[in-house]
Length: 220
Length: 257
Image 1 (cartoon, rainbow over the protein chains, first blue to last red):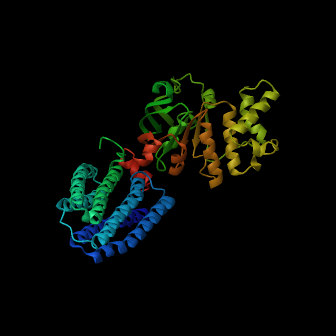
Image 2: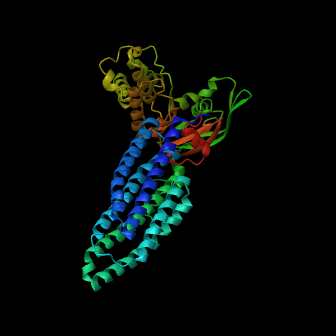
Image 3: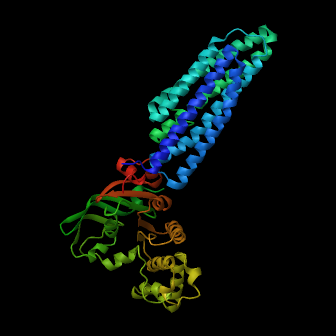
């Protein structure tokens, strides 16, 4: 039996969100690689790709509105459209943070190379892995998996505090590293915000799967 | 909010309904609360109109129809042998899918029930009651200058509101609406829906509709029926965002029905 039109459109919506999520994940990975390898070309590529991500957001918005206007979805279908409409700007902002990291890389690469910060790499690997898992949980509509990912955000917060202290200590000991150090502080903050956005994604997955709103809740 | 038990207007317990040997309703139990709008939805032939008609015993007009179980209004069993069915149908008014004005003037359509029930004190009081009923049915402004003209001169939507006014004139407590807007255009439908929202301040309203968006727009609670059984009843917001039963979800998302 041929799928109903609304089911086809809902499938398209899921696919588009997954693609957008993949692009956002790739942007973060490339931006961090550009930082660790001092690759300005790669950083610029991240900035150029942001335009594509913005277009994808607009297309998903358009499709979401169209589904609501023409099909008046209810129950699970409605929660899916609402979740997607809320997740899309989260993914777009997440990608913006990757762009901000890329901008920081372009500044840092004009300065002398600094010592590596392994904790920063741990932080970014963790953020990327959380994002990937969050997207999987969203597509699978797995509320329990989403809840577990939310709990892991504490690890990013912990790494952020550690990296922050290390960078401040470096700047104090060697003021010539101030420019690069400041940019690295921004990078760390962007990674920490990426972790927060992944949490938002997971909260919306719980809403989609369970119809439970856990946003702003102390008990998750 | 008072005690939930004090707020029950109609209580149905273990109701089974038959047309001869054919069973149309199976073990229905549900309460209708005071001054709520509750919508009955479900595919064609699911029993929702049959169930609606048990509230004012309109099924009595069908010789082979039989109810087994309990239906109480304000705690009184309406199927008790000594029930005054005429008084019941005054208390529980009904509006049908196809509007059915009498072949009389607009005024006389509304006045008819008042007159035969001798509700009015005198001619002046009658006129006041007719005006109030037409006003409450959101029709007064459109007909006040032609009350003596034939009701058949009204549009479909106006005729339906006239039928509502006719029901309101005899001071009901419950209004039953069996697909009241299904024969109307979108603008007339919207007026009926707005009227339902206004009327629930004073009356308990039970509405049967095959238009799920209408149920979503006007009702406080929604009851879903399937093959003569009550599948689920819940606050409308929950029904349309997260129903308990998969069958309900499949119906309201249009996967069947």
